[in-house]
Length: 213
Image 1 (cartoon, rainbow, N blue to C red):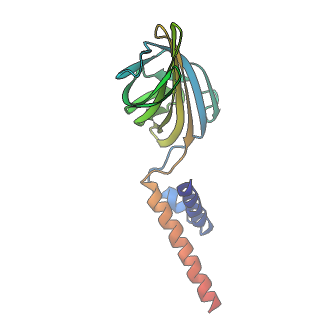
Image 2: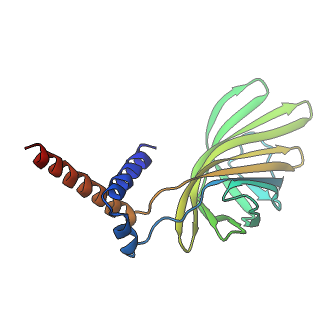
Image 3: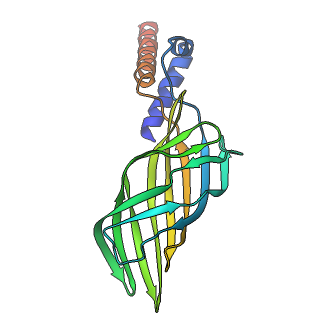
């Protein structure tokens, strides 16, 4: 958030000196505009209910019940990747009949696509997986933080969120995904904006010093 604050101050400084028009007349690329969050879920199949298996694959069913805020209001999921593979990294402390493990997953360039034309590219990450035994029944559940980017032809916007999942004896289960945007300037635009802001503030400081002399 500190970076975003400095970015905001630079833009404000440039605007005060009448420089914003120069930024947008330069023809440089800039970040897409997208603000809000989207959540959706569905059914899983093929969940491995063993104790910390070497790997597991979540087969996603069609997403349903999507809800959105801000620019995601009324937006639906056009497509969703068919599966997500996770790989065992290490065992986590267990409690009673619950065993836990830390798992990794790889990048997915098109985790899902939205009806507004944006696609979400998932970064590599980790999640926790818990397995609990109740007599002859076994349940599996877990949670992981997600990071990535929404993008379309106009640019990209960072997104942060989470993936939760459950599974039961037989391999069926459910999943839930929530992503919230965190808008940032593209690398092409950021140096120019910062340069304009710094130059404008420096000129203002020099003018103030001359006025005081």
